[in-house]
Length: 308
Image (cartoon, rainbow, N blue to C red):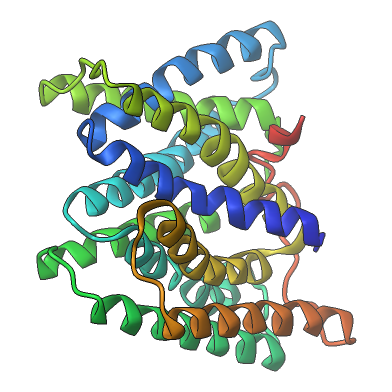
């Protein structure tokens, strides 16, 4: 896995939690998400129509991409933004999301016939330990969210895992721009309907809202979401999801620098353990171990064109 690509993915994906916190004080989650996706979807639609991106795709293929977009964007992002607005800190939301690698690794074999080596399971175990350390540090700092609010980002994590495996089981090649456009159009429809239905469609005039919106479009959508599928297509489910272990500590550092959120010795230790987990899993492939997985033909091609 390309180290620079991995580092960019971790930074861009983590930026989504920071952007959600940036916009949390100026508007509701559905308002921010509506205006994040509506203009973006219209631009992507115009480009895709000009390039005839959906040419050759059956309605069934497009429908699959709609479901993938609803799970990996709409469901996942709504839960993340909602959790932060409920009072769950950006670092805690990220660390709950960090459980994803363990879930994806456990399901890779039965669902995609992909196998995880002992060394990679060791890395996954280290990753869980790193997340646990960051969790304890964040809990010790105190919070104001209700206990049930911590289940909200967990549901979002499961939504993203479901999208990953649904795409992995697909045998149809989908043009990257067609998949990305379909996902963003789906999210634009979902969030616009929610915003209009709840009377929250009118955006605030505060500059912070539009700064957060631009931040999320550039860094989180094109950067984080696009790189997720690019790395997935190159390296497989286990290795790309192991990078998720870095999101919680990186977000914690970022939140401390940007918002003054607590960052102590235990958080730093969690960052070190999570980094060790990534090195162990990545090193397993290079050292001659059996590769963890190969995404089947046609799988995980959804957003590989995001780098274009």
